[in-house]
Length: 124
Image 1: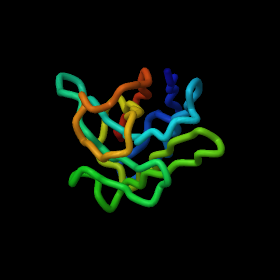
Image 2: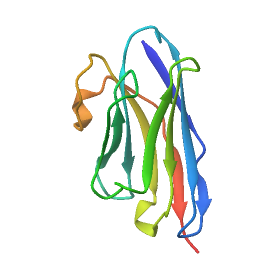
Image 3: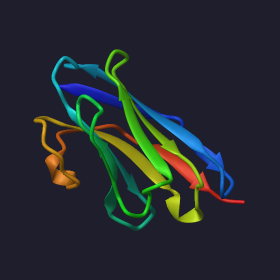
Image 4: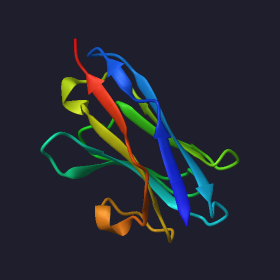
């Protein structure tokens, strides 16, 4: 079992930046593939970004490519999402997720563990 806790959400003006963090605890010795998803009001939970265990491969949704950067610090058991040039359509609850096994997936059902989310609001 892995427990995930997100932090760093908040209210930001369009064009601003935020950095989300996700602290993992529990069975952190396993090599998890990690991802960020987001869910806007009335919408499904969508893939945002993912990263392999070593941090050498990253994957992004087209909507955030070039603006968001996913990274991880395995020594600190922490996953990050640096979000720049934020837009109102980035408003959502952002969830951290961990996937057992080493392969990439953008599917929600491929991820085994989830945090409770952190809210990001982009507004004037």
